[in-house]
Length: 428
Image 1 (cartoon, helix red, strand yellow):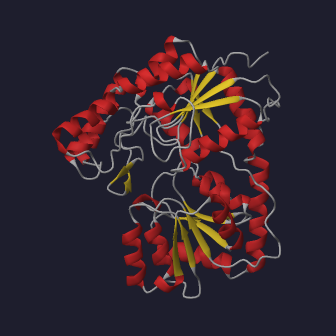
Image 2 (cartoon, rainbow, N blue to C red):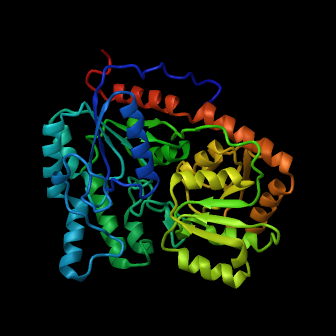
Image 3 (cartoon, rainbow, N blue to C red):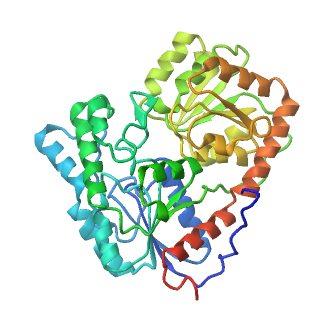
């Protein structure tokens, strides 16, 4: 919290209300889903009634209203055949089954506020019509840059790109930035153009931005600037990490995809012959990363753990000297950093997106230029070779997690935004 910001009042003790969370996936698939599910648990603990709407999936837990959910559809890989592709495009623009399903849930559950997350493509803004027609306040957390960038990430062939900023979505076609495919790039460009021209998200009363960086990009893009509100993500610090556990090694936790820059971390590891690395997570880049580790001669010092549960990630972090996030894209506000801080582990991150907002160099981590294996190796070495310094940085990281990113502060900020959105019964 900045020096001139005052914490919001304690809004936890309010009469119970009904909150409907909406996301295309309803299981722990990535950061957006983890945030939504952790927030829902927090709100349930506050005594509020929480329900969900999203796609059907065999991976979903048992949920009320599941029979109303639209069928699951995946866009990676793209659907096969002309008919399959046509249905996918239609669903991205407007999904009648999602509109019909959420209308049924709204009438049955009667929420006081609808909290949206990642709804693009599979659900589409078609779900907002029933919300608006029933005058239900709607808040949306922006987990990525989709409302300003057709491909979500401000990336063009692996490099940061803002060519579409300000509604210039045709640049996605010119650059073929969606997987190098002209057709796929055209589809997402048309999707963004149609939704922007029709103001498809106008029913959303407030847009929550987890990082100042994302908030700034949304303002530059003209995405409902008067509705943007900055609220950082949260982490439950849990019990302090055991002081007697020796700290050693490096941890990366996250999705294994190109934009995460794990290949740069492997190349940095090759410059650090005495260090080992735990890689927690899975994704499309894993086979290539395993091959690269072998080519670099570091395979015996890297453990690819795959997708492991949160408790195991926490244990790995509590035993590590440092966590690393070598992203080559504009990370929003990565939960991986907050989770490392909660475990008392300093973090080395790159100088892109919202990462520099979280890390204070020399205090609770270090910031290095993206794509620079030499600078990354030097930063890792500066932490791991001085155990006392690493421990002090870890203590500072833990204190920051408790002070600035605790569940209570996040909850109160969010409930204040629910108030702004006009949530019924919040002000009783």
